[in-house]
Length: 150
Image (cartoon, rainbow, N blue to C red; front, top):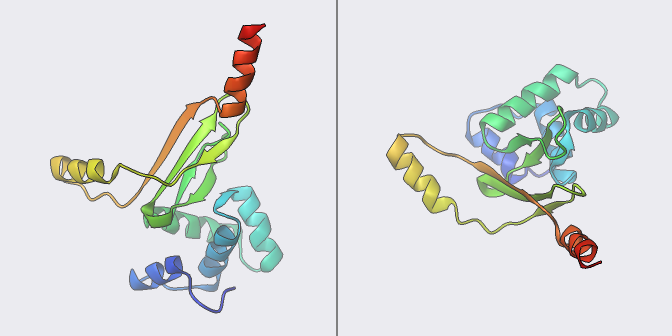
């Protein structure tokens, strides 16, 4: 477990949530893994660190982190099991190749004005978002063009 608190752990504490050993361990595993883990992978990694942290504690931590927009479940591989992704600054973006499954992350986000408009128009408070585009990656586009050119 980290000695210094990460920004996300500080957000937990400032939000009035206890920094339990289980929560900090789950958060540490997510952060060190780059934030793209299925619940099964997360459970396995947490178990290698501390076998006393139960499955229920991991899922309760994931639920809390999701409600606080620290993570979001996504179905990148079109599977039943979601992949949990960290939301730096409350948002995260992917382009997912529908041919090879490659996931391309990008950081530039122009949705902040839209979020503000939605908050005003619908009377809600948006605290994060996950944006996924689906299409062909550069390699698959090149392969498709090569097949057409034959």
